[in-house]
Length: 556
Image 1 (cartoon, helix red, strand yellow):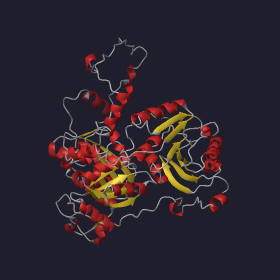
Image 2 (cartoon, rainbow, N blue to C red; image 1 turned 180 degrees about the vertical axis):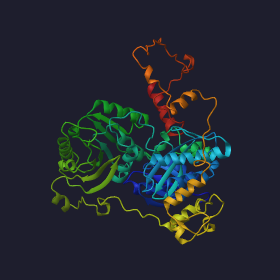
Image 3 (tube, rainbow, N blue to C red; image 1 turned 30 degrees about the vertical axis):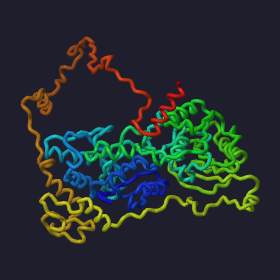
Image 4 (tube, rainbow, N blue to C red; image 1 turned 135 degrees about the vertical axis):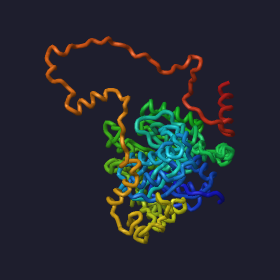
């Protein structure tokens, strides 16, 4: 694959295996599992596809530099030495998101500040002006990841998290993430080959994600933009070709059913389904979970009942008992997947799970459990050849352990990104410095220009002396034009206040007239006002155009 580069796809804990399969299907090479991520290689087309098509990815990152830093000062120095013109200009805007897992770097915001300082000082030194920080809609979004002393800085190609699909313009309280919902459906094995149901649908997230999976519609087509569209090497023609390609979409021969006891939730879910143009595939009704009595002979049910953490029904134990009774009596022949947070809630369901998968829903540790529903006793079910056990799917041991790369492997990684042989301030390579040896490469440090081994405190003091132009040698000169300088000098000499004059008659209240501050904010003339609809999508050829034409015909 020509022009291939390394990328990292971020995801939720428990969905790494699903994301790996998605990326391989899109043409990614050398894909490897990590903790809440998958590393892979590909070209621009693979990166565009990963953003458009991956259902379980949160972000697609492109690493640009890797190095080792033992403290915030070394982090700052390394960032300041990097050639940022490749991605930024002095008139650009940028944003930084930091993730830290280190004993040396304990605060992600401080890491963000130090990286920002290094970038800003680089441009100030070279151009006399600097790019600006912009929290939303920045030209370049940077991601900083630190594990112990290993630092990786990446370009964020996605911008807003990929879980922000664009169709969910309204939501109920405590909605599930679109990425997590899609991952749970994919873990269930459902691909649109039977009916699907969510009797507690809330905002309708499971319903829409199930429809996208069944029809094989790319989830990224609803988004207004991606961060890579602002990059200098953005290939607009290639992206538009991938965006408008609906050749892999397919027909869905079954039905997706949703419901909720809350009329407001049902109304919100219907509007979100309408935003996604999936009304023909999804049917939503307002009813309790106990009213699901007429169902097809087989199907897959996926639901996320309240945990009692953010939503608190009057009797949550009774709710789970009703779920279990309804599943047992009215969903025979189905496979039910329930996401919950507490063992006592699952116990109230009263059914034996066949699969238990740990899932992290935000900050809440949850368990996804499957129930194989059958008629009659378990012994009769087994005698007929049925089974609830799936040894190959048992995943209740928790997330798999991830192997961290060795120091030698990390050094090779840094050299790939051109940072394994950084020069010091005197222009010397590490192996050219006095005292450089295997000990130095393992973490020991030697003072510049000497063979003496120095510890961390001594090294920090030496480096502060080297930066005397910024710190130790900085002096402030008194300005002759500064107001009230005489008063400040008097206070230093003890002449500031005449305590003897502070009697009852010495101070008289002074009346000041109140005044109103004029409103000087910019005003937009009435004829220049623009009103936006609830949701706007890019123009897309094919299916959406046909849908709009059919809608107009029905309206006539």
